[in-house]
Length: 205
Ligand SMILES: [Mg+2]
Ligand SMILES: [Zn+2]
Image 1 (cartoon, rainbow, N blue to C red):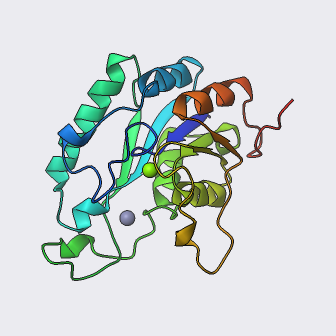
Image 2: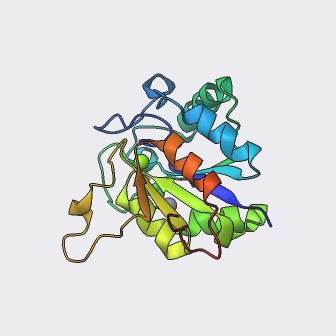
């Protein structure tokens, strides 16, 4: 059983561009230290797994082939700093139907779009991941909600949405990250210094 660090993508490893999000490889701007953070995680024995919502596919802004070019660029940029990603799991769906120019096959309510947990469950099964020793790093409360539902130690970062997207939870308390860090580099350093045990967040010394 391997521990893993699950990374959200936009707002964690690369800048969250806002608007419709990342629509092509040229929209990828790495957050400083992201490649080194992935490298450090793997050197410490963690799998580095990206779990990302890609509603742009359902909305017709990006094709599946286009998505592959985006992921290829991201992988290459992270690898320049030694950050090798073990796998990328993505959700191409969005529940809103009938978007002009959208892709009807992907306009469904699915279980993989975060805060849904299907992508995590797939990764855990594919790699034999030890959830109790693993952690998630996200910039959106959707990431944190998915991590919480999986029993993962769930860390937030102040880049991207900075876990301030509370408007997604108008009628209930939003999920709270175990800890909030300046960026992915700081979050990974903490993960490595305070390994999660049995799915509970490490407590400060
Ligand atoms: Mg994000
Ligand atoms: Zn999905």
